[in-house]
Image 1 (tube, rainbow, N blue to C red):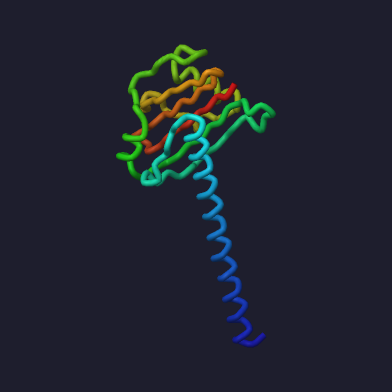
Image 2: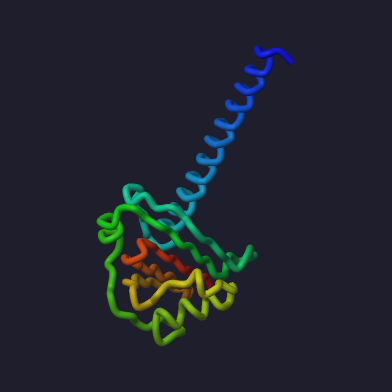
Length: 157
């Protein structure tokens, strides 16, 4: 093979890698935006783009005919001010529809979808936001400032 042909092959491989990288970034960004859109539609939660959130973990109970089940997401973020203004956070735990505390509810839900303890929040470091729906579906958002993480747990009935 001559040098000119080698250069063309290397150039084509580089172009293919760059295109693959852009496609991957586009897919990831679209997915995060879709989840953000779902959060807004389901719960009125808007994850600010300026917080520069990045999903680092996801687990759910799988597809369901009625859409019921558990969804769990962990995001890291860069801009704390945007997270602080995102919701009306509370520092103490309240009760939920079916549990005596937020941490008890989250642990029950995460047990159902077998989330390891290494992927669970440190409740002592978190602020909380909680909401329910008429069908008894619930969402808990936990904010751990010390780890720059948001934990979002949804239970759909």
